[in-house]
Length: 151
Image 1 (cartoon, rainbow, N blue to C red):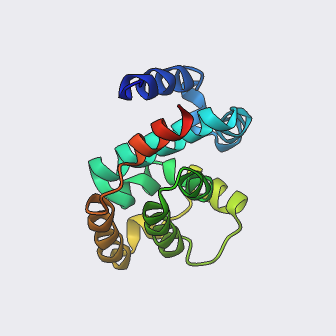
Image 2: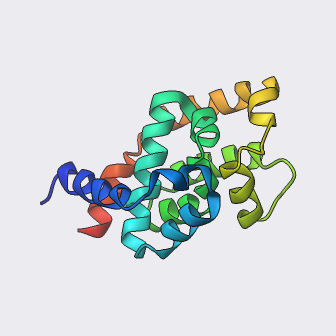
């Protein structure tokens, strides 16, 4: 069986295709991620989720722009059987997307840093913090689940 190195190597290949200027322009990044084969999208989405949440929580996940793809990440988590993590991410998404924007509008707003409540709304820190703890304590290793699913 392959180890985590398989995922890390594929992730490095995926992000090597991202041009630095795309990080400030939502459309090219969105198009690039959407154009990836499903298995590469899954790796990109799950590795970013895991890295961001374990490093700085859901607040960081959304403020750094990775949360722009939360709806897609939720689908991938369900696909690989990480249902508890998918539920946790769904709750975080619902908290941040208070206005109920459709995914494409949500993505554009997050990538263009137009979700100012992430920065200005202290009310988000506590509920997102509780979800950080739930994520860390879920017992689901989403990277391992991804690896097992694709092998």
